[in-house]
Image (cartoon, rainbow, N blue to C red; front, side, top):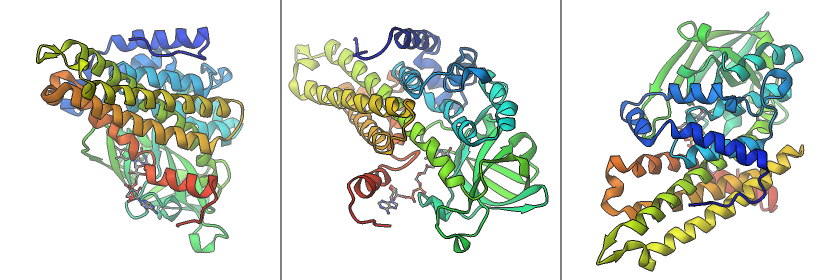
Length: 390
Ligand SMILES: Cc1cc2nc3c(=O)[nH]c(=O)nc-3n(C[C@H](O)[C@H](O)[C@H](O)COP(=O)(O)OP(=O)(O)OC[C@H]3O[C@@H](n4cnc5c(N)ncnc54)[C@H](O)[C@@H]3O)c2cc1C
């Protein structure tokens, strides 16, 4: 079926078409096998890298495509629409945003060309901690400056793709919270060379999860990080990562939209072809309406995503739109996932139909990179001006 491409330029349509052709080489059977074995999609990620897609947002002067967040969004959306899983590699596209916006020229020259070519993988982002959860300013991983090094101690949880990355962008506290005028101060961003760190101050413990997401617990025990690996200003790390978080929310919303379109397409095909009681099940409005409703919600979320991405690309910082896009896309894709499950009946549970894998994968968007409750609290307080709750 044909989804709307309203507002897309010819170049963007060609971009989606080429991503779609690449994805066709990685059918759902490929993903099922990886999911069963909890393996990383190395071939798929290599193909995306060779195609330059993960370097979409890196400026041309550093070897990237120099495209906007809207184009990155369309790439990730197309990947998930095709039944693939962009989460294995999406972070290579956007983590570098903090380096691009806040790194020194020397750091950009040193890392961005390698990230653009794929020679350097920067796809691990270390924020979440067991004791802080979503209260990021309460993280307790400490980086203490000693001469020309930071000594890092602490613990992170759910840090994805660490074993498939060369660098980790780490958020750590450099000044104790009590000594800061504001709780958002005193946090800093460090670039950690994982090849050196693992086994020498950093222990990585994989966490098995309901999705094949390659996520880990990290234990830092006097890890030494060169002081020159500080990105941006010491103590301003929270502000630095916030900039990238809007891009991240727009991009992951796009994955949800891709998932939603995937589920709608699957559900419609099945509803049209499965015959019970002598007629296609899609002739029953009890089957038809939930799919139609989910479709409308997916397309509405896409419009908000488009607005957020275009505002971002115009140089704005669309916190409101990026958060709304993430909220709406995650809810709409979950709605589409459930409509699809219901349409497939018992067959939805059979792995060979692939729906159950996508069903598990799309649920994550409600929780990560930020739970929807926190998005609502942002909208309620920062946008609508209601009292702070925490
Ligand atoms: C597969 C996977 C991959 C991940 N990858 C990464 C990664 O690469 N890097 C990284 O840094 N993190 C990663 N995360 C972590 C993810 O961002 C967090 O799990 C998420 O932010 C929620 O944190 P928490 O689980 O500690 O929730 P908690 O903070 O413990 O919250 C639990 C629940 O309570 C709700 N809640 C808490 N406080 C409030 C409040 N004041 N008002 C209303 N509701 C509230 C939350 O919405 C949530 O639903 C990943 C997580 C998963 C599951």
